[in-house]
Length: 103
Image (cartoon, rainbow, N blue to C red):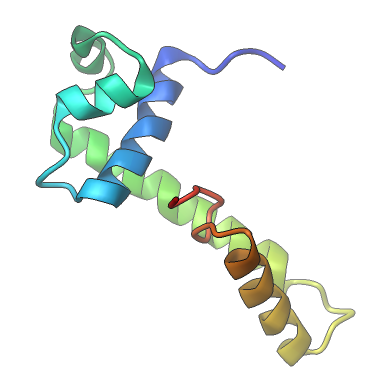
């Protein structure tokens, strides 16, 4: 498997930083530091912090949708069993719905 691009590193780190600190408090410097990227890299890949946040949120909700789909689409289980599996797997791993650790 190939190494994620610097852009991907910034997006992944940015999601965690914004989840922890919030959009207003998260700075480009914080995001780049978490990604291990030079600050100038941010503006090479993203037009603005707002554009970056929009992409992070789009990815977050796409991941959430996929996580829920995988957890709830098993038709061999009853609806109650599917819901229980969803809650158990998300709580047991200490993760938010798309698999990003909040710890």
